[in-house]
Image (cartoon, rainbow, N blue to C red):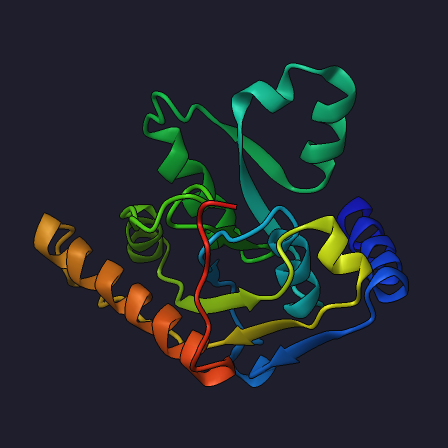
Length: 206
């Protein structure tokens, strides 16, 4: 309930502050199963826009464990469906927790495979979680302002979803297979960017 209220509030605020958001290919989103929504992390606001674009499905998120040390912030992010992860030493729970959540079927999972805004290296976590949970991976991209000033200037925001990437349940989680799936995700990101704007280039230095 808290998640839905928070998402609705943020949707309302962004409509007032920006009002220029466009959500494309929403028909690609599964309606009968949970899924893993993956996207390159380009700005502090893209998780919010992705969650709004993919509504009404609620999502769970990974958050660094340090955020849970503050009791007030911990209460907020836990009720927003986040769970803690030790980025320095992820451990088995970084995989087991989202797999358990996805198998439950109430929530989908949002992951930024590159980890940070300044990296283009995809890690294998999404592929592993998808394989163990049996849910599809849905690629998406955000194109739009990367600063609050850009949002307030009502610069165009576009979220576009791609075709599902289904992981063969019989596939082995070898380095080669994980790399193959990671390459599929990157190719999907590149294709979606081209479909929105063939001249798009993301500046990771900002």
